Image (tube, rainbow, N blue to C red; front, top):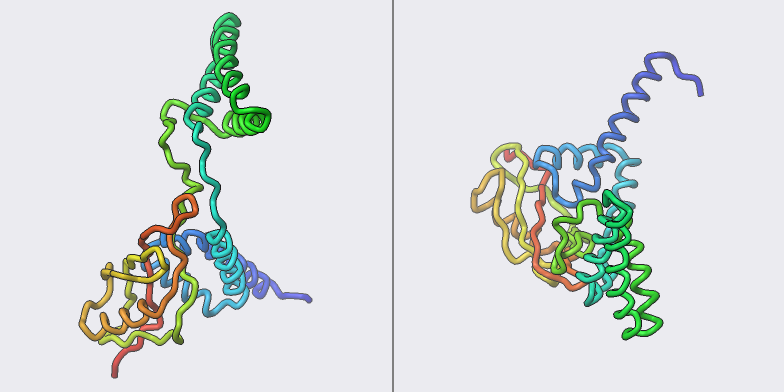
Length: 239
C-alpha cells in the first residue's frame, strides 16, 4: 500500500494517539486517572475498534488474575526477611572480617530452623531467601507484619445486568462517582465527585450502579470491601 506524504503523517499521528491511550489502560481500570481523562479514554474506545479490543483483552486478563487465590505468606516470613537483609548488609561490609562474622552468625539461625522443619522446610527456606535477596532494595523499613502489595487487589468492573443507557441531565457534562463495593462485588454506597447532583440524575446513576457487578477487592485472596472511581459518559442533553 502506497501512501502520499499527508496520509503518512495522518497514519503516524493515529498510531501515536492510540499508543498514548493504551499506556493509560491499566490506570483507567484501577481508577487512578482523573474524570476528564476517563471521559477522554472512554470516547476514544468507542471510536477506535482496535483499542477497544485491546482494552477488552486487558480487562478480561485482570478479571482472570483477580479470581486467582493468592498464597498465604509463610509464618516465619519476618525471620526470613531479617536473614536476607543481614546477608545483603554483610556483602556491603567494609572489611572481610565483618563479612565473615555476619555471614557465620546468620548461617546458624536458618540451619536450626531447617533441621527442625525437615527436608521440605529446607527447600522452601532456601528458595524464599534467594528470591528475597534479589527483590529487597531498601532493607531498613522491612517489618514482619508488612503486607506485600501483590497480595492486595482493587475492585474491577465485570458486567451490568441491564443494557447501559445514557444519563439524562439538564446539560452536557461528565459524572464521576466514588462507589463503595462490598465483598460480594455489589455497590452499597456512593458519592458524587463531579457532575450534577439533582435527584433525577442521582436516581439514574443509582439504578446503573445497583445493576453492576464487580470483582471485589481482596487481601491474600479473601474478598473485602473497597472503593472504585466510576465515570458515566454519553450524557444526553434534555431538550
